[in-house]
Length: 457
Ligand code: PLP
Image 1 (cartoon, protein in one colour):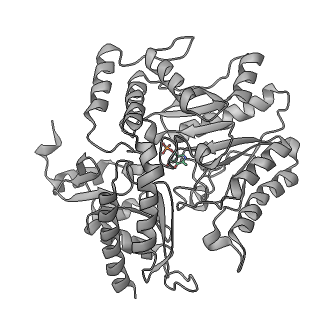
Image 2 (cartoon, rainbow, N blue to C red):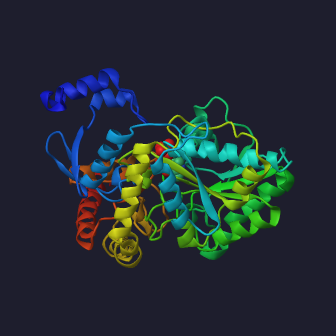
């Protein structure tokens, strides 16, 4: 049975009847019908009506090598024929997670050399939370278990991921978070810097909110700080350059572990394998997923620093944690070839030296001056456009994010897939974008902004 035997309407009706979607208002979905994406090639996705869309989100921040990579399909096929599955429990392993772990240890930041696999970012953040608390228990300090995070952070949608995250709407539906997680201010200068406050000073102030939380809880009770190097789903919030060095200093001072969530930023997006390398951060754990396989297979990897790993090994005892699909041989086979493609095609260097700077320039020169744009910002191939009613005062349009949805809908109608979160448009394209693709995106977004402005004013 193939989907080609079904009309668009039939697929939408079946979808509405049986399929509950992530992060979706199902009443709206049923009224509007779903958009059925049926194929993709290079930087483009195609829907069931044959519309071509330039994918400004790399799927969901993940398809870094672009669509249509037969090499990845062949890697999966070959592995499935030879060994489709075996677990890595009970002192077993299979070849591909072994080789992938070696590769990850080679490209990871200094001092990070161990890998624990899952199938999603949420799962790996769950692993990270458990591992960090287990570490302090092994060190004889089980009371050191508070995790400090930020408001509006996104660390996934499982109970642990939601608890670590700082999204108020998600917490509102949680019915009780994992205990001992506290949230401090985010480093978001556009809304939170004081009038006249310099970017540098704002970065230090935002980092010191972490120190205040540590002192309030007592350093002996705090296990770790967790943060996305650049807050992604929260709106591509790029901290001032002063922020991370100050966080690092504070963590060292109070002996607090540093957990980085690089689910979006790892594997090239910032112009280095990891944002930790772009920003000079020295983490104890790095959560990664998404672009590890460019989304061709579900796979996540928690990279673990030697401090935690050596305690785990030296103290011994079983860590009662793991997933059926930890180290899945097919997903790991695909990841190995995906990383090889990123390397062979020089995609990281391209982001760092060419497309990243060009993307920044295109946003600044083509979109920043628009009548409803309050700020543009980017880092590597991650970007944000703030939608405002008044460029001077930064007053937003009424309706809590409704204006950004208008922009998004015009963008999609004009062949450009991008995302709206709150009043912010976000972009996270495949790393295969060229200068020409960036120009095409800027044209389409500029047109969407014009049409949205006409609607909104
Ligand atoms: N952490 C970050 C920073 C993310 O952006 C995401 C997903 O977007 C996750 C964790 C959760 O990953 P997953 O959806 O694979 O569970």
